[in-house]
Image (cartoon, rainbow, N blue to C red; front, side, top):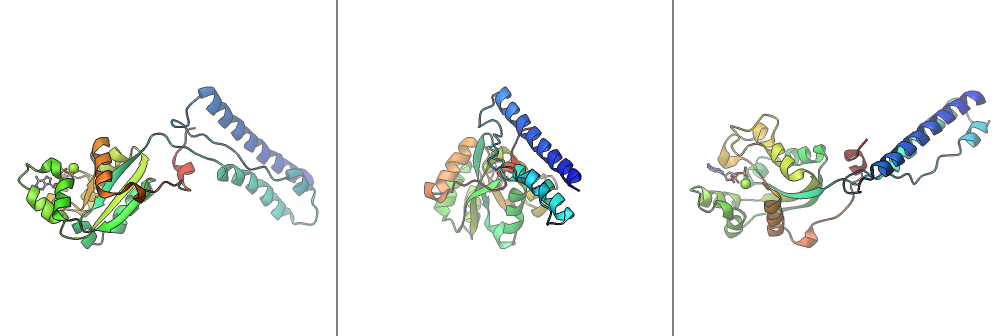
Length: 236
Ligand code: DAT
Ligand code: MG
């Protein structure tokens, strides 16, 4: 019995040490910066494998499980991943999306992708505020109607964070005209006409910065580490 447990214990330990050394070598040898790579550190210690194996008053199965699982679990729990080039984008669910009960569907798509919500509020913008938001379109014939529409009911204003979130957020949203949006995108799946295309997303870094500043006060933006980041980002 002890021989078998020892084997299992040393296998688990070997695999732990191998992974740790591989990761260290990787980080050191490639000299990547924290911003560009996942820096992974192990803070935990391995359970005393030999003493587990020597204990005689517990069942075989329990010991084998306890030996195999904690080694892996320690590796997983203690990774710390730092993602590269985090950016933020402004996303709004327009009054049509809110009225049609699509808030959770839309938020879910950003969440499931792995992006992180750092600010959210439900507000009814004034027409003047809508005008500021869409000021780049002020010469377009639909500008007045568009501003009326955006200020016609509650809007969910959000800031999402993640690597590539500005560009990829636009991909999740789909083309401006839902008739041209691919199936699988938010507008492709959930909207039909351009005048009711349910969602807004910043179209570039400059716009993202301006729109976040327009819709949110700095203190409304949160900074936190999501538990899932170590699984969402990383290099091998
Ligand atoms: P997007 O929202 O994809 O960034 P945009 O910035 O060009 O598109 O336009 C802002 C909104 O204005 C868009 O979501 C819907 C409305 N819009 C755009 N083009 C339009 C058009 N030709 N007729 C009516 N509304 C339009
Ligand atoms: Mg736009």
